Image 1: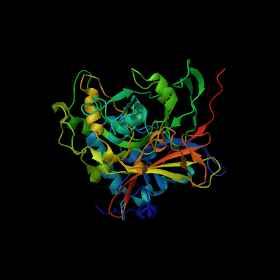
Image 2: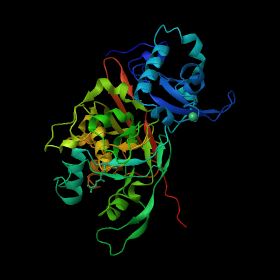
Image 3: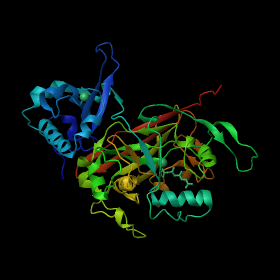
Image 4: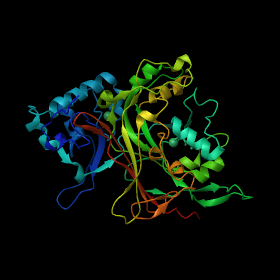
Length: 422
Ligand SMILES: O=C(O)/C=C/C(=O)CC(=O)CC(=O)O
Ligand SMILES: [Ca+2]
Ligand SMILES: [Mg+2]
């Protein structure tokens, strides 16, 4: 599919993350300036370097319900209307924003510049589950922590996951304090308490469940695929020292509960449709309940960058692709619901850390620095093993089409010093 042209000029450049082909959904506000009073939060759609205010246009153009769905600054109520309404809304938006659209004079005044607003969480995260579904990441973690890249016995049969915290999922730009916690060095007799010394990132994609499944009722992978509303970039900040001490035998807890960052724009499955790609060949046949007819992954280029405090530019640490995953979000969602767990609109599923086979494709500092044994050098000349206070970590992602791209917007966060515990 080629670039679709819009009457918004900035949407027609090959390097914009937000051409008419994309139309991602976000929530924005303004704290005001000398010339403009505060406004929002509003639901909006990105087009080029602008945002179309959907909350203000709802009454005139987008009535799907007796009650407004865009009035409270989150996309959850719209998601709940289901895939037919998602498609109808997207078709209408495409018509309204296309080159030579008769709508231009009426809606032009509902555009605001992205540079004039602040982005907020695009949806209310109902529940958050994080998986461990990257083949190379799992092999690397085994090699680093257990001396062997062999996978756990269940890994090729189950998309392994744990229930994370929705309360600490934050939008890109939110600063994160280095967490305090309990940890124990291998040779220490007693555990200690204090700021994590092994603070890390995890490069992931987040899948957003758009329609609910019923409590007590399993779903197929194909049904799960149709329930997914869209995707964001997701950084599952991880304190490796806290995690290492606490996570046997029940899994991650405080080491991953202090913050999870997501990119501000929900990129819809409709926009990503041309980039679908199958999961890699199964090394062992999956049990039949995990079979599907859909290509569940997407071709999305991903990058991790680190910028120390005061540095003029960020250093690229890693480049990989979402197509490296072993399990798709649809397989994960099917597995999640198979025992009867009801899934809801606004549930967020972390893919698991995405790493490719080459060292240049590793999606965590644990892997890049091989647990701190191999420091890496930034463009400033400084070296790092894990994150230091003041470092800004950014995830980037884009599906590359024919003369256009489907971008996600940065998923960034700066690490602040630990809060002093009384
Ligand atoms: O294999 C281990 O001991 C540890 C694994 C992880 O920390 C992986 C994890 O947190 C899940 C993921 O995002 O892939
Ligand atoms: Ca409402
Ligand atoms: Mg993770």
